[in-house]
Length: 187
Ligand SMILES: C[S@@+](CC[C@H](N)C(=O)[O-])C[C@H]1O[C@@H](n2cnc3c(N)ncnc32)[C@H](O)[C@@H]1O
Image (cartoon, rainbow, N blue to C red; front, top):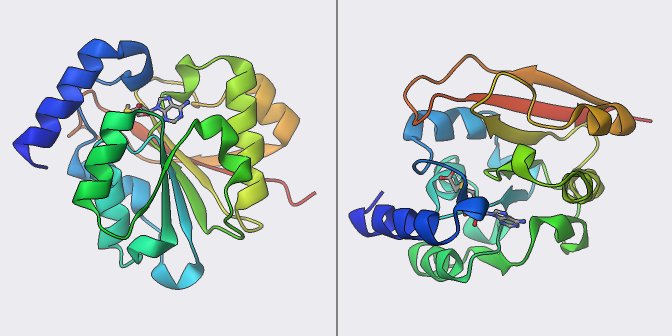
């Protein structure tokens, strides 16, 4: 990550702390865990809350073509940086709550850097229901969290019939984090 990206991230953290909600961009160790299982042959990928693009870079490093990656980010300054850093990437300046409206069918995964648990429940619900309209059957919603609990509210996990797998703790991140992969019951 370039020093200018780090400076942009920290500047936006100070200006919009309730949107950024992280002490630092995700480390390369956390990014590697987030994108494990991404396969360029399995179709498009959707990313939520791309920020300055550390997870974006990790998805592209798996071999996904930029035109097969759709990155949603609501902050206009981050969007400008993403467009400059990743030519050909589909950058959507919009709320992740509208992910269900993206013109993408059968995404292999939705990979989220959003501060999901700090969002109001109706927005979490829009993000999750929209996600499972866009992913192929069995495709995961991938979300990191710094806390000890699953990063989707219990009520939503139950309503949407979500199952999950959780990674080991990634210590080389600020702060340490775990990665959850949520999938939905076929019904
Ligand atoms: C914790 S930062 C993660 C940035 C980057 N993905 C990373 O892991 O380093 C959260 C990002 O989510 C974005 N964000 C927060 N709420 C959002 C929303 N409702 N829709 C889209 N992006 C949002 C913020 O602007 C910020 O870029």
